[in-house]
Length: 321
Image (tube, rainbow, N blue to C red; front, side):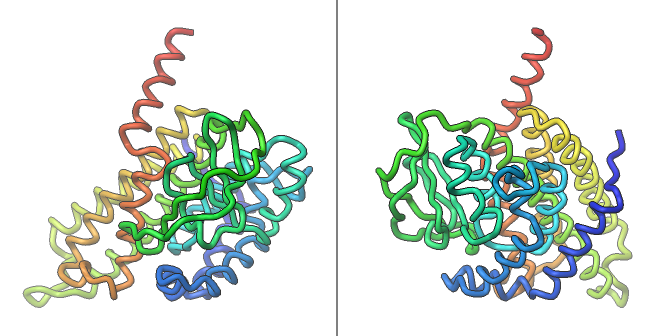
């Protein structure tokens, strides 16, 4: 099946691409990695003004959604530009806060960008808890509004600042829709990973056209062409799975899209690192901002093994029915 974006969706993607290009996101990412949130918050507000977070929030609570296809379109661009912050977690928070009283109280601020949310199971690390204004955790008792966060821990991707959430806090609901929220988180992560992979491929193609060996661009070598072709095929195969999953929003379809997009981005990252040579290993070179993100997203909200198990469970369930 072939999935093509309509004119409005393509225009939305183009507008986000133009805005994020002008924002110089690499400098924003580096500042965020050091704990400087001012430029990141400013960019967050611009992304919210473009309607990105509102796509995860129902219209009844000042949102535009839920519109998973358009959300996937947006997150591809966010990944393409390596935008930092708890982007996926804010979408997940919108999916967790479905009880009408909670939705009315908390969702409008998420849609407008006034609030930034993070979310994690109790006892695990939450992304950017130091920057988030709404911190959600859940355990056997239900969903809680965490009262604060612990010390920041470094991660593989310096822009992904991990913090434990403090226990206790207000109990929001005893029965949060965690499975539904996880599906939304995986969709957004898959889209973000696809964007990361596309950026890595574009940067690598540009590099091999400029880098020379034996007096010719290395992009003219057959082995290099084959590696780039494999990366391109993997990413293009992930694209219809992503948008197909956004249409169905079933656990199995989204898990399949997540594992396929993340594996494609990770494979592209390895190819990019190899073809860039020694410069690709340096943190000062902007390529690193995408390399580390590809690796981190691969394990976020379900590693490849977990996602494959969800796909198999969905297939087995379908066969039994």
